[in-house]
Length: 112
Image (cartoon, rainbow, N blue to C red; front, side):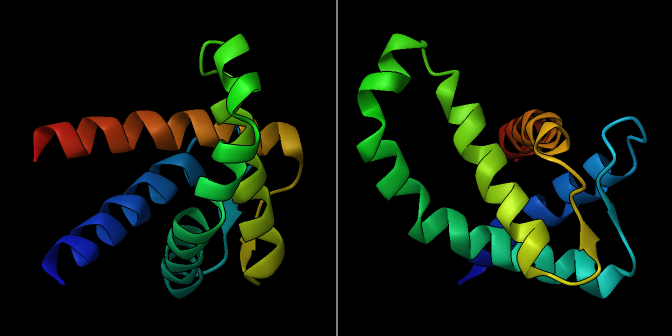
């Protein structure tokens, strides 16, 4: 249970950092909407990402893993559509956000 809470907190911090990079365009209206978005994104990642990765595995191999950024962007974009108060204005914003979230999560998980 503790590791799930830590991963959720890391994802919430990554979303917070991403939302404060102005040129990406992702924003949130309240802290509660940010925390709900982190929860929804975590659930979507746990349920749908393995399916998408399995189905697009040849494409992931052909692009040397860069297609994973598009999968992450799609899941982030959907999170913006599902959570009111968490705004992902475009798919381009979602791509930039996916890159930043991945880098922040990598840094925080490596630090822990």
